[in-house]
Image 1: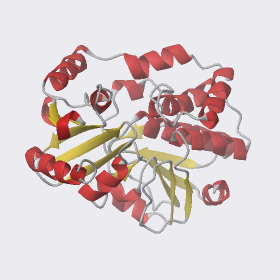
Image 2 (image 1 turned 90 degrees about the vertical axis):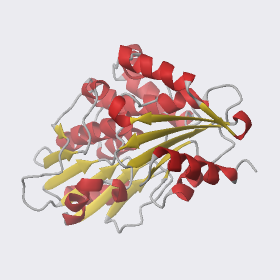
Image 3 (image 1 turned 90 degrees about the horizontal axis):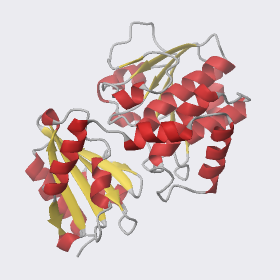
Image 4 (image 1 turned 180 degrees about the vertical axis):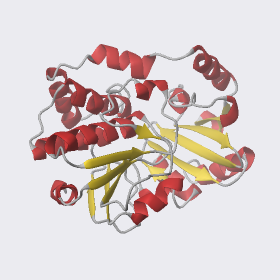
Length: 316
């Protein structure tokens, strides 16, 4: 509920904002938007933002009211409050000790997978189109007015998580929010071009290689690709969406090799609940019914075998 988050922030002087990997535009937009909202409602709060990944060029184009550093270190005294956005604290990795060491802990998230850890405050709504939409509703609760900077951060997450208002998360609530953001003066075509359409030559080549080397499973109902993270650092975001929107495909899967582990990203056209598939793959796996993921401590080919086994329930 907004009231529990409000009470937690009101009673804190030092506040950490963070999000678990893999980072996406909704997570970074939510951190930036929440920081702006807190600064305007409670200007004396001391805010810190830490993540465990470099922020891509697309993220850097968003307004940033405070440095978002990719380091687990935090050279301050014990935190009064730590807030994890757009994900669960179980996935924070090296940042987990910072979160766990805070006097109070909170979560703001729109994913279906709940946290199993005790929290002092939470704002979770799986029906919300994005986590940034929840930040907009917090702004309303706090009486924080929209301006272009705040509206841009909120719109970025809303735009990307709805796939440019194409995905099933696009509902009247999301479209009403988008109308308000446009009224605040944002440049929607520019934001959409920057976040959804523009790509580097390297990513364009990667996209071509992925599509030409796709593995077809379960009679073509599942399209899967394997990528080595070291050969494509920072370029794989959105690639899995290319796979699921191939005619006849029900589930798109991207297996990303990272060191001795593999990260699996899943997308569904709707028939298969991929959050359930992700949880079959790993206890920490999950997300949305149509967009989920899981990390596995194994090589890509073993991850592929485990994925086939987890999907066999859906394609008997």
